[in-house]
Every structure is written in C-alpha cells, then in structure tokens.
Amino acid sequence: MGRKRVIDQEQILDAAEKVVARDGAARLTLEAVAEVAGISKASVLYDYKSKQALIAAVVERAVRNDNAFNASVTASLGEVGSPAIRGRIAAAAQPLPEEFRATALNLCAALAQDRELRATVQDNQAAIVKQVLDTAEYPRGALLAYLALEGLKLLEAMDLYHFPARQRKQVLADIGALVEAK
Image: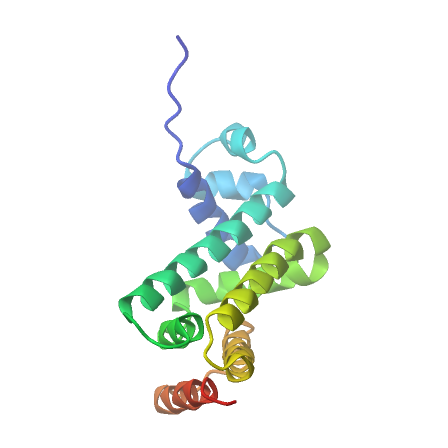
C-alpha cells in the first residue's frame, strides 16, 4: 500500500498566489511555489504539470471564490428585485482585500497575455451578464449598473484609482440607482 498524500492543493494555490503577488505571474516558477509552500517541486508537479496549469488553477480558484462570495451576499439580501445585480453591488461594498491586490494586478497582466487563460474569465463574465439580465426587473438599467460596477472594481484591481471610503459608498449608491433605469 502506497503512502497517503498529505499535500493539500489549496496549500499549493495559496503559495502560488503569494509568488504571483511577489514576483508576477510571468516570473512564477514551480520551484518558488514549492519553496513558499514548504514542499518539493515534485509535489507541485504532481498536481500541476506546468507553470501555465498552475496559473490557470489560481485564476479558476479566484473566479470560483468571487462567485461564491457574490452568491452568499446575494442570498443574504433575501427577496429583492433584480437580485443578481443587487447582490453584486452589495458585495462590492467590501473592496478587494489588501492582501489580494498585488495578486489580482499580476493576474490581470497574465490574462492580458494569454488567450486561453482569459477564456475562463470571459466565460464567467458571459454567465454573470446573462444572470444579471435574466433576473433583472429592468435589464437595461441592470446592465448599465453592472458595467459601472465592473469599471469601479477594475480601477481598483488594476491599482489605478482607489476611491476614499465615503465617496466609494456614494458611487455604489449611484450604481444601485441605475438598476431601476428603464
């Protein structure tokens, strides 16, 4: 009987995120991820056969975590009109965690350079837009609100601009008002 595997994939992905934040996705190495995770390179290779596969897994996890967070916030709102966009607006009240900002910025750079990697995010965006439109009382307003919300989030993720808390709260309220536009 072989040894039981004790290395958690989440541990490897956590380490990969740290390396992406520190060095950028382009300079990520499997050796650096293994070192940060405190495991052997062979252990990283066991689950992720290449650097690209590892970066893709980091992107997929980020998308999955973001979707789960948005879904939980949406569920917490109870019965509301246009739930998909209202949930996303409510979720955006919590800006991107500071410890994930460098990772997000470097993943955006990786996405810009890799069509296959971008496909994961493109497919997710298409599903979100469909959900926003399908659940909206006023699809035009919901779509405008979604576009404004994503613009806000992109400015922050790309580290281009960060609204002061008070102004950010007002911008989110204004985006929320767009949901009702006919």
